[in-house]
Image (cartoon, rainbow, N blue to C red; front, side, top):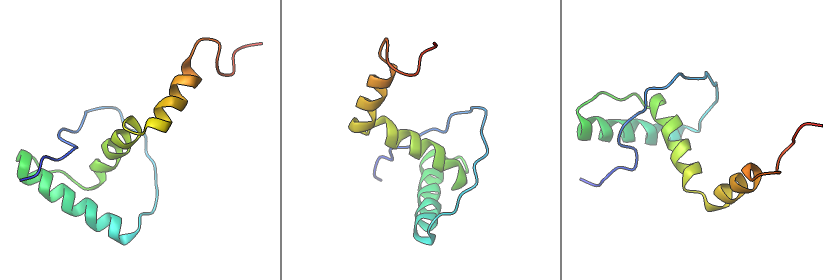
Length: 81
């Protein structure tokens, strides 16, 4: 079986977000959840995959990482005053 990029779901305080997904994305989430359930032995709902998938995407997006670094550098951002 292929190694999945999402392995474990962190237990963190959630923030509720409501959105609509294209049907094909939902079908893929269901398929991914089924594969992860088989791989880990723990039942995973498709909805619980969205946050770690988004986090993984943002963590591996080089352009976004560069933007975050520039926004978090000393003296950057909307300081006081």
